[in-house]
Image (cartoon, rainbow, N blue to C red; front, side, top):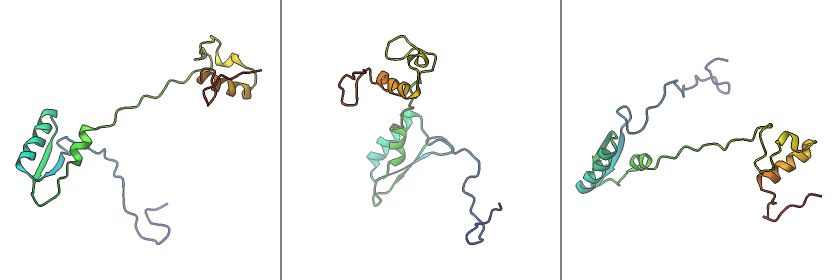
Length: 132
């Protein structure tokens, strides 16, 4: 398939160039902030200096203050670590000591028992489950 749009025959615009984007607050991509007063400029500049981030601050009393880049840098999302899955030969997390593989014979019961083990023997409403 060529670099032409199938619908109207025009050349497609290249969106991804394969280059990695620079991190915000570095020399390649400094944070850009707009403030209205000299006092606010000093306050924001001190935050950037304290953290060691590269920045550009514009001072314009007529424009609305825009500190979006600073807020992004201060409130970076924390890395989420995935919960470890239970392997088929490992002991069941319910504490029974049996491996999940040997806990049951057919898959339907296995699935149900995994749910029971994850909920520590309790159903969705928090009441104890009774298996007959």
